Image 1 (cartoon, rainbow, N blue to C red):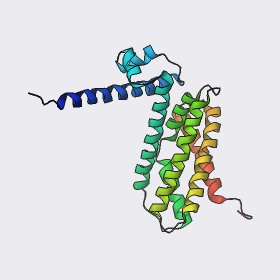
Image 2 (image 1 turned 60 degrees about the horizontal axis):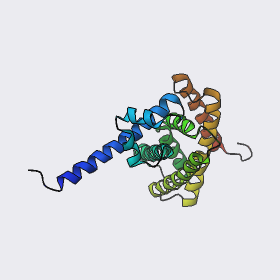
Image 3 (image 1 turned 60 degrees about the vertical axis):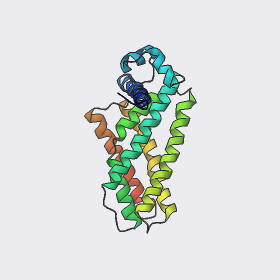
Image 4 (image 1 turned 180 degrees about the horizontal axis):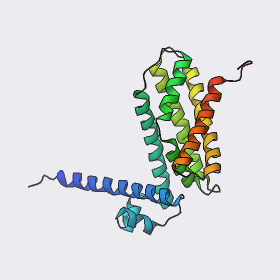
Amino acid sequence: MPTTDAVPDRRAALKARHREAILDAADALIGERGSRVFSVDELAERADVARRTVFNHFASLDDVVLTACTRLLTRTVDDFRTASAATPVGDGSPAALFAEFTTAMRGVDLPAVIAYLAGVIGDESDPRPQHLIQDVFTRTTEEISTEMAVRNPGVDGLEAQILVCSLLNGVALVADRWIDETGAALDDASRAAFDDLLDRLITTVRRGYAPGT
């Protein structure tokens, strides 16, 4: 006979599954449509839950989308950490730090992330997604800067932060150009175009702007 604790545990597990199913459904719909324009009924059908279940977990459809966005960006940071951990630590020089960071950055599927965020932001008249992304972007920069500094104790923490911030802000510029040129498609040609833009960014930052460079 199951214990009394087992019933609450099963209920909590079911609630967690429903919440993840709703967020996964939102991800799928955004990916398919390239926008966050879908109804609660469509979301509930895709998640295989009742309409009321959506509102048991989220205050609104916007809340679903913003939570899904936060989850994606958190996973992106985790992906970067995984890629970084697989990259050998350099000799502690700024050049080695640059090489380590850019190698890890290439290990993350940035086009997929950018395409998703382009669909989430969509209507620029709604500032909420943009503010959320900016907040998470700032936190991401801080977390990655700290991790780079810890992995490379010979590098000044401020230098690590400047490097990470410069490259990540550069990625934001590259993303705008890429979206304009490709419509944020995720086919082979579009991904190759993104890689070319990323190469230009990395080359420009590495070279710098000192006389003679």
